[in-house]
Length: 370
Image (cartoon, rainbow, N blue to C red):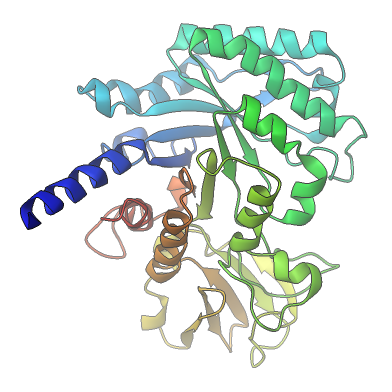
C-alpha cells in the first residue's frame, strides 16, 4: 500500500513537472547559445532583436540572429524536450500606439509576423509594450487598442499553431490602468508578469529599495505596500487572470545605488544615483569575502542587499534564498510557471560555485518541487 502511494505521488510529480513553464528571456550572444545547457528552460524569449517601428510595422531579426536562436531548439534530438522559441517584440510607446490605432495596421502586423515565424521555424511572439496608456507618452486608445491587438494576433496565430504571449507590468498601479485582463485571458497563451524594477532610482524618488521583494515590509504604507511580487500577482488574480496562464516573473540581475551617506543603508535610505557596475550575479555573489562588504537579509521582503559604507554602495541582489522563496511561492499559489529575466545576468560561467546558471536552475527545481 505504501509503495503504491509512493509510486502514485511520483507519477503525479512527473505529470505536474511536464506542464510547468520555465520561461527565460535571453539576448543575442548574451549569453551565447552554446553556453545554454540543454533543458535549462521550457521557453525562450529572444529580446532586443524584434520591434515595432514608427509606422507600426513588424521588424524581425536578421537571418544570423534567427539561425543562432534556433540552435537552442534544433540541437535537441528528443522532440519532447525541444523548447518553445518566442520572439519578444519591443518598441517605443508611440510606435505601439500607432500600431493599435487602426485594425488594418494590426492585421498587417499579424500577417507579417506569422509569415516570418512560420518560415523561420519559430513558435510564437511575445509582446513587451511598456506600458499601454500608463506611460507619459501613452494615449487614450492604448488600453482597448492593446486588447484588440491581442485579439487580431490570436485570430491569425491560433489556426497556424503559433503561440501568443505578453509581458506585463509588475506594479498594480500600472496593471489596473494598462491591461484588459479579460483580453489577456481570452487571447494570450501565457502572461509573463514582470515582478521586478519595483524600486528604481529617479530624481523624484532618490531612495534605495529592493528590486524584486516578494512581500511588503511592515513599514510600507499606501502604494508602497503594493511594490512587491505578492501584491502584483494578487492584483492579476483579483482582476480575473487565469492562474495557469499567469507566469511569475523574477529577476536574476541586481540593482545598485550610490548612497547619500554610507552609514545610513536601510531600505529607503537616500541615494544620489545608480550604478550599473554590479548587474550580473557573478559580480556580487562573492563580494562579502572582500573587505568592507556586508550582506543584510530582510525576512519580510524575502530579499537581501549588500552595502559598503566607505564606497557608499548599496546593491539589491538576488540570492539563492530570495529565488527559492519566490519560486516556492509561485508553486504554492499554483501559477502556471516562472519566468527568468534574464539569462545573461545569471552566473553564466560558474564563478559562484560548481554550477552554471545557478539561480535559474534553482528556481526551476524549486518550482517543480525537486
